[in-house]
Length: 245
Image 1 (cartoon, rainbow, N blue to C red):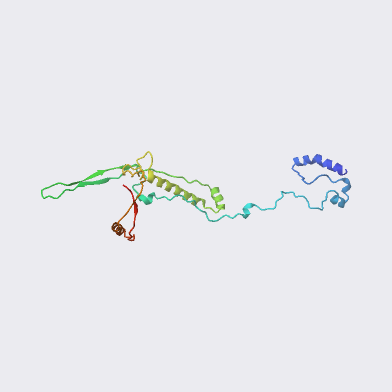
Image 2: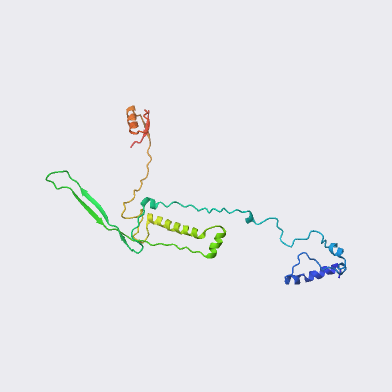
């Protein structure tokens, strides 16, 4: 079998080798009969086996990117808006979670006075007592985690259970802060912005711009106004702007 026959024979049988899992990427032919007894011919003639052999793996000149990536050991928490409802109102615990309703007795003092007279009984006082009630609201959140989840997070140096505890506290506190302002819908549980027992909030009116006029102010008026403002020096202005109304 000469060289051309060796090329044809291997080409015909390559698919059979590959179907059986034997893949020869750089093999082109069988060794011809004339080359089997001549080592130099088999190594040099046509095959150039003394040259740099072809790669059998994928060419690569780099390293995995993660080897050149640093992970900061500090875990940075994302900031949210502060919770200030407790600072505004204050917090006091009343009862426990077994109660369905809580009453808060209130007493409003009333009265009037009159001019004194030895023979007069004018003037009186009284107290108006009421019993507004509120309904407690129970709320919760749930932490779920598994052993493998903890181990995977540990590879990144993250204390997963601690982060879940912090998330649970954050969720409960944020909801509580919201109920301090708006209460709970469907219950007699109100917040500072919608409690029917509180006076209505003042609604700001529209602002109307008015033209300014220049008037002359006497030195005496200027000194009087400066004396009323202890932090302002006493100066005598020649003119100022005031509203016509």
